[in-house]
Length: 83
Length: 83
Image 1 (cartoon, rainbow over the protein chains, first blue to last red):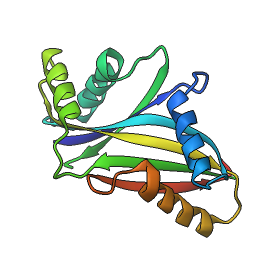
Image 2 (image 1 turned 30 degrees about the vertical axis):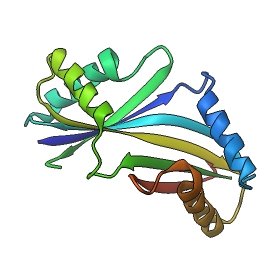
Image 3 (image 1 turned 180 degrees about the vertical axis):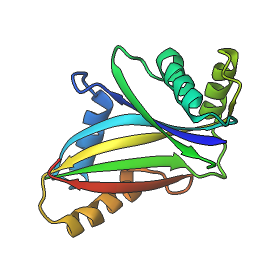
Image 4 (image 1 turned 60 degrees about the horizontal axis):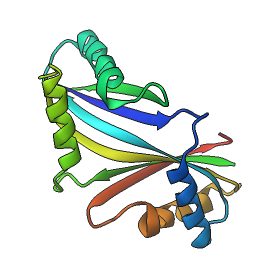
């Protein structure tokens, strides 16, 4: 059993209107020290498998095929055993 | 200047229909080893400040007031200096 934590972020060259909106809201609340906000996704997957190398390859394929849009997003993941 | 990475997740007692949908899609693609999927948000904030303790307190307040819904979500954050 492995737990995988995947983080998907917009590439830095891609505009993040959601982040800009949140920044504006934080400024309205008085948090004017906030200079930039970028918003991404985090996904936790539990995998019923024992082979860490194979699990990593399959998670990478899941990210490319479904979980991230490689045109505008970067992804990274880490595996935790037995979680 | 500090970079803050905030992770907001649904509490484990709260149903995650988005995660369930993603799990179904992964199964359809043949990734049947996926037993559970939970989806959250990750936010990166850049703060123009020099006081780490004060920055931590203010980030905690931002989470409670705007970035997370404490009724159904948990949040955690970490500060990185000069990022």
